Image (cartoon, rainbow, N blue to C red; front, top):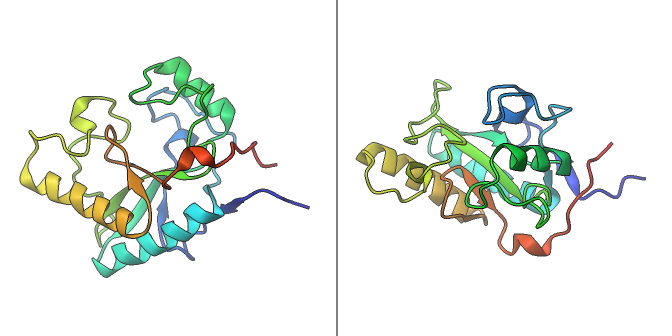
Length: 180
């Protein structure tokens, strides 16, 4: 019997697009990190994602998931590439992604084009901070729109990445072993 609190995110059910960056080599590590291309979230985070996806649809947009549940081995690999606690959580502390309660995402328009957020996903620099001041107004609006959608669905933002949202009190959720 499977006791995992993780559920697979079905793009048709939620509705979202899934583009797991770490399932390809086009990421900050420059290599494929994930052994599978499954998008998983803790059941509580999945419920919030469902709300967020419908809020995005009301605005004529779609959420594109770039990362969700992250196995411990993947967190360790990312830490080896970028051991900066401002952007990658030390695996000894446990990533909120490894708890299944964090999701990285962006918004796409009706034509499938990602909205301009001012930086690429995983651009680990001050310009990626959600309220970085020196960005065009349209980028600021896009970031605020994503933030509004995610906060209204029950997620919280962090101060260093416009794309990262997690459940409140994420550290209280247990780390989850990689599902089989």
